Amino acid sequence: MKLIANAAEMRAIPRSTEFRNGGVSFWYRDAGLPERRAPLPGDADYDVCVVGAGYTGLWTAYYLKKARPDLRVAVLEREFAGFGASGRNGGWLSAEFAGSRERYAESHGKGAVIALQRAMMAAVDEVIEVAEAESIDADIVKGGMRTVATNPAQKARLLEEITYLQEWGYWPEDFYLLEPDHEPRLRVDGTIAEAFSPHAARVQPAKLARGLAAAVAALGVDVFEDTAVTEIRGRQGGESAAAVTERGTVRAAHVIRATEGFTASMAGERRQWLPMHSSMIATEPLSAEAWKRIGWEGREVLGDAAHAYVYAQRTADDRIAIGGRGAPYRFGSGHDNNGATQPQAIAELWRALVRLFPAASEVPVAHAWSGVLGVSRDWCPTVHLDSAEGLGWAGGYVGSGVTASNLAGRTLRDLVLGRTTELTRLPWVGHRARGWEPEPLRWIGTQVSHGLYRTADRREADHGAETSTFADLAARISGR
Ligand SMILES: Cc1cc2nc3c(=O)[nH]c(=O)nc-3n(C[C@H](O)[C@H](O)[C@H](O)COP(=O)(O)OP(=O)(O)OC[C@H]3O[C@@H](n4cnc5c(N)ncnc54)[C@H](O)[C@@H]3O)c2cc1C
Figure 1 (spheres, rainbow, N blue to C red):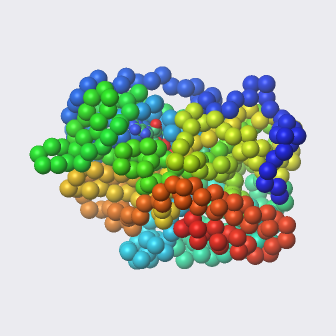
Figure 2 (cartoon, rainbow, N blue to C red):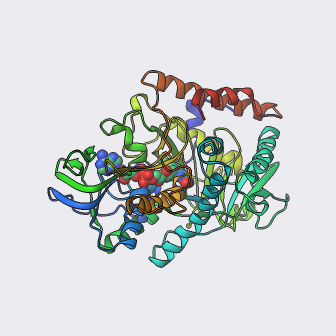
Figure 3 (cartoon, rainbow, N blue to C red):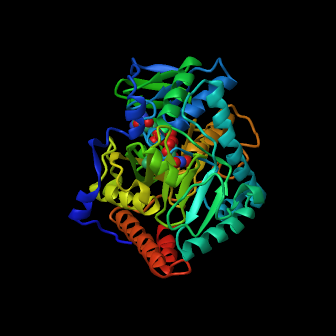
């Protein structure tokens, strides 16, 4: 496995004449970019003000308004609903949870962590049910999740993971090894072991975000777009909490920050969540002949067991969309808004695509894009409400936010309404991590750990039967 693509390899990537890099994401090319809603007209008072119209913000507004139709709820969005990771992701609606189980167990006990895992599984079905109830057509197919191992070290890790997860809330039927000729067939080249979980569905992410925004607006939530929040203030003295924008200030009993990967650009939040980039490519539709070779009738979401893993789906129109961490961190927590992706990341994803699916090697790449997600210093997602200040937030889902944001939205509803429920007792509620190091340490640390994970993958692909020590070192540096 090679790290750096040379110019000839870059030129070898087949691209459509209509190839596009950026433009937010392929999902919007498929669904069409939405017309923007009107911005905030001026100063206003609400009961709840949500900042950011990705899944976290939209689910929070949705469940609040459903529970209390009389609440006045506003959502302030800098671009348009679903502009961020929610409109760019791999479309894995899965029960995967990113945080360290051991860390949560330290504060809440093992039972609470198991409850969190079971709540994630239930949240997959909750999203599907709400999508049905609200007539949101997001190409959802609950085909489960396959994880493939393509070398002995990956296989050993996959087996360990199955055993490990069964201690933390997965029962034997929730994640298990597949027999080699399992039906429905999904032929991934070089597979020496594969595992399956039924708790996952494929979605078209932008359609989900767009449909959810429409459902929220139909409930009577005021969704203001083209409205950038420059500052969030907590309640002080007799003054309510507030979200300040150039178009006016919204005062509210509660202000909820739902800006995940963009949080570092907000005043005072630079070091809370590291903005981590993830990149994707989508091919042109594959021929019937290629699909005959690959299978993938079940539309499972697919990932591998590498350290720098990839995630993939078969789209509703028969393309392969595959993603991974191309160039994960930019100095000074920078990010590109439009989703433009570095050629190096495109080349790496294409190499992964043809390694796993040789039948796709001639199929032109139609689109490449990137997005940004949030990572806290201890890699544990959180949901929080500070009742005294009237400020709340949720995020840090580390690439597993499609389902977690739904659970977070319902949890924020209960916290805002002052209810003590099984959701508010989950161990990610109120979890705090220290901030990331200042630059240049933050950049150096992320570059080194990313490089080590890649070296570990290379060594495992070449000869290792066990997880490479480079991966252990990377985990220590990154604080996972
Ligand atoms: C390429 C990629 C692939 C991924 N794949 C998966 C996957 O397959 N499965 C999975 O579970 N997770 C995946 N994730 C992660 C998942 O998409 C995110 O965790 C999730 O969408 C986060 O939702 P959110 O609403 O918290 O944040 P976002 O969707 O990023 O929404 C934040 C919103 O806040 C707005 N905003 C930012 N700053 C301001 C401001 N100052 N004022 C007003 N508004 C502001 C942004 O414009 C944006 O719309 C992926 C992420 C990426 C980038």
